[in-house]
Length: 127
Image (cartoon, rainbow, N blue to C red; front, side, top):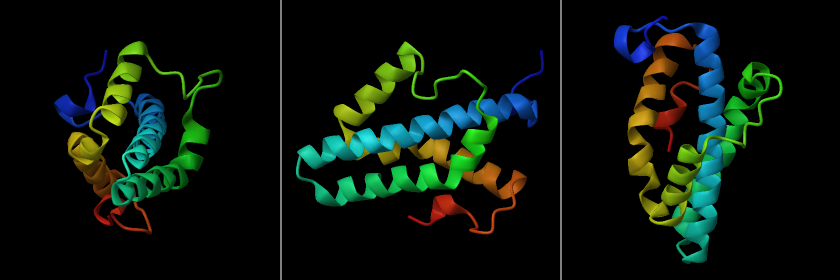
């Protein structure tokens, strides 16, 4: 079995694509859920930020997700552990979501720079 990207800098591209498609869909859902929870707390600035992040992630990666997701995979149906983690992050302290997501955001920014030529530049540095 091939080692993961984090260990040696290379991953099977079809594995990465499926994993990344699930990740992008999950992050968009997480940001949307956090925005709704923050809105209930009348923190309109954070709610607006996370609503925009959710929409931006969905728009930026929609074609990729649609192309790479395996047939029959329900992108909204993730494992129980991930569901629990996402629920905790979006309900308990959703304002801190940006800090929790920072390692993933930095990793994908680096991948965006090195593996993908994007006409929008590094989209993770824009907000």
